[in-house]
Every structure is written in C-alpha cells, then in structure tokens.
Image 1 (cartoon, helix red, strand yellow):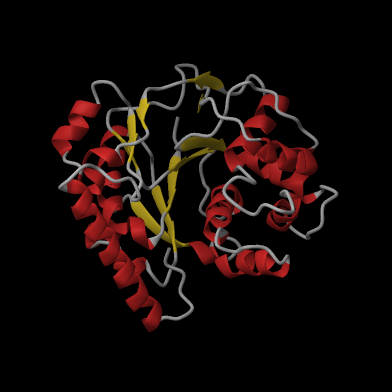
Image 2 (spheres, rainbow, N blue to C red):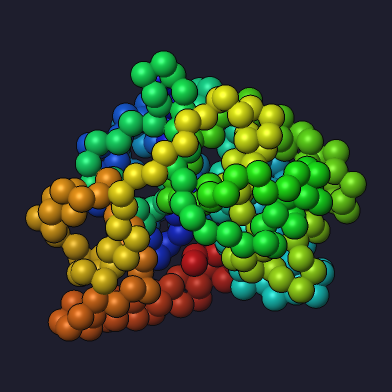
Length: 300
C-alpha cells in the first residue's frame, strides 16, 4: 500500500532530523517525505535533507490558507490564556490539515515524530491492506471532554491511540474535519472550534489530542478499517547518549524494539549528560541570535 510520510519539525530538532530520516528511509517504505517547518527557517536544514530527492520541504504557514502559527497564537492570546503551547497545538493541526492540502495525493499518510527513530523495518498495513493503529495505555480526561464537544463521542477504547506515529486515512480525516466544522462550538473553521472546545482553564499539552480524536472517530464510524497492535518501543532513548546516540547502540536497541525516541531534554549520565547540556545551550544561543535577525520568526 502506497503512503506518504509527514514530519512536522522545529529548529531544535533540525540536526537530529538527519539521523531520523536516514533510518526512516532505511526501515519504512514511504513514497514521499514531507518536512513541515517554518519556511523562513528551512534554509538551516542540512544540505543532505534539502537535496534529498524523496524529501519535499513545505512551509508550515502555507500548508492551508488561514492556518498559521500566528493565527493559533492570537486565538490563544485573545482568550486570555497562556500561549506558550502554541506550537503544540499548531503541529497537531498540521497533521490533521495535511489531508486537506494539495500535497496529500495518496489515500494514506503517516505522521512521524522528528525525535523518533525506527530502528528496524516496520510495516503499517496487514497482508490484506488494513492499516495498523499502534496502541498505548494512557488516559487523560480533558482529551475526551474536547472530543465530546466537537463530535459528540465518548471514549470507546480502553487503550490509547497516542503513539509516536499514526497512519491517517485522507478521506476519513477530511470527513472528520467536516463534522468538526459543523459542531456547535464557537469558531468559523475546525481548528478555531478545537481551540474553543478545550477545557477553559487548560491550554496545554493535556487539553487536546489529534490521535485520540482520530482514533475515537474511526472506532465509532469505521470499526473494521484498522487493526490494533502494540509494538515494542524505547521511549527514553535520550537517557543513553542523548541525541549523540551511535548507530551501534541503535542496532542493539533493535534486538528488543522497533522504535526509539530521543527527547532533547532527557539527560544521560556523565559525560554524555554534560555534552547534551552544552548542545542544548548552544541551540538556545543560536535560537536567540536568529530571533534577533528575524524578530517575527518562530523557531522552537
């Protein structure tokens, strides 16, 4: 089954993205890879990525008319809420909105986290063409409060759809966004309605989940489309060598896991922890310098 792959990415993940993409191309079988990032920052991606024939860099602020980082920022600010999580909401909306964009030319597209490496080959469809959901075990009530307001649906699966990746069906996503557009919630378009459906006191990473929303929708309206599975993964890869993890260690992780995630804030033991700390400080210094060059640019 053909599918494209999307990776929303911000500046702090640019250097690690090179390793991620190398393993994505080695162990996944995407037809095309779309890098969704700030168009003003894309020139700081490595030449290796910019010249990769399978990769297409897309300005995140031009993916869909009206959907921009500044738009989400101003919605949150106008509500009198804390706006530090603008980027979190925006990257979720990019994953959802990709289905409506001109770039979505396959029936399925895979969303993949920039800090997650597929350490061994991974398929996303059964032999008879059913896509997989990768299931986890968490639960957070505000996600489902928002889902109920937007779609009138309640939690219908004891497991969670939140993982480091998700295979979306373009037509189902379009249909779901159409229903959100019709929800009796303030807002003119689906992302405005989502922002107004979250718990009023919470605008954080704990107030909306695109994966729980899409998974719950599919479970209700397309219960036979997906096959659920659990795959071994290593969530705290950053505790080994941070983002300086070697290919040798990744090959050893592959004996027990399919994917490994490397969050920049995870600190491995000395000396790697100190190296990672210096690396993070260097990124923040460079971030501030670039912000001085382009005051209106979002970097992280």
